[in-house]
Length: 136
Image (cartoon, rainbow, N blue to C red; front, side, top):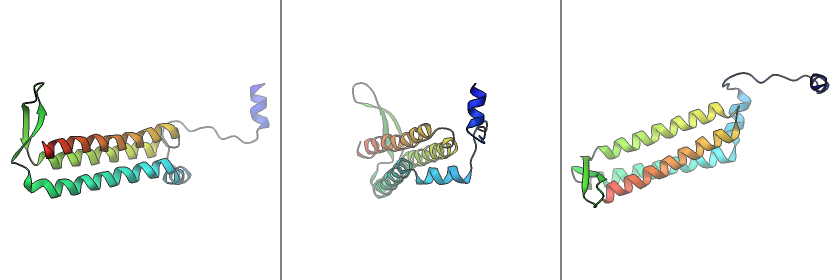
């Protein structure tokens, strides 16, 4: 019965196995409002953080506190170049999330959108860390 119902639908292409990327998938991914908004927000936030870090970099002490003990004392310090390393790691992780989201878009739109949301949340977490390091 099920086979007959499927035959009645007409020509049906089977879903390819694994991840696949086609022009139609790429176009749908880049036209998705959630992906565009999340990508733009993550990019603007990364640019703002980079500008703030560049502006504040010379004013940072040679070592910055990156970890605190339970009583509020400094538990770990790094040289101030660590701030730029945090930006690079955040940008690479966000780029990785967007690349994986683009690959998954043809298989699952919701999973792809959650990866974009993860990239945005990663940038927000990076912003909180950098503000703490730069003001701390």
